[in-house]
Length: 296
Image (cartoon, rainbow, N blue to C red):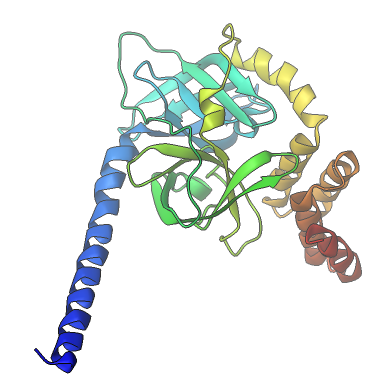
């Protein structure tokens, strides 16, 4: 065989293999979603008058039906309920584990004699460039699927170590599982930075495994005690500001971001969103000054 023909053969072979890999990858995601979706839930929270307070995402971590979500999803709730992908709803009985710094909480539901599909949690960090899938309930759209890659694992005060992903997320995605191509949870969606939906962050799965068991605490009692502690922290102030900003109350969000920065001057995300709020209010000089702080 001539060198020219050999080159053409090798080129064709490589293209063929690449095509098979692409087709295989395209087929993997639907199968993965089918496997993961039954364990993903939407969480609704209500105030003392029974009015809807907010919503977020979560997922089952064991057959008993214990659910993982973010602390900020439950704050201020008088009561809450979880809705499964099968349309079944269960009231939240209480909290049995939390990590204030990691913005994670484990809740137990008011159920008995029932088993649930659940997700395994991976304790090792994903690799940069690793493909991941997020299933959650952004903007009230239940069971929404997005995919992307791990951009990098970085340290981001005051959140600690976080996983930066490109999979799009939006308000309501908080608490969603970030799973690898084996269907194991590598992280929990915590926040997004910017509306380009490419700077999104998740808390590593290791923090789920390290949640210390605690005596069950009723949701109303827990949110009262934890809420005070949370709102005094830079992270709590930041998430409070975000929730107000997502309602397009830019003026109302300003003091929360400003106070968060006072407590932690290196909080880049708080600088960024403060700048964004200033920009939306037409206060461009202040916005530029603050945004410079977010990238220094």
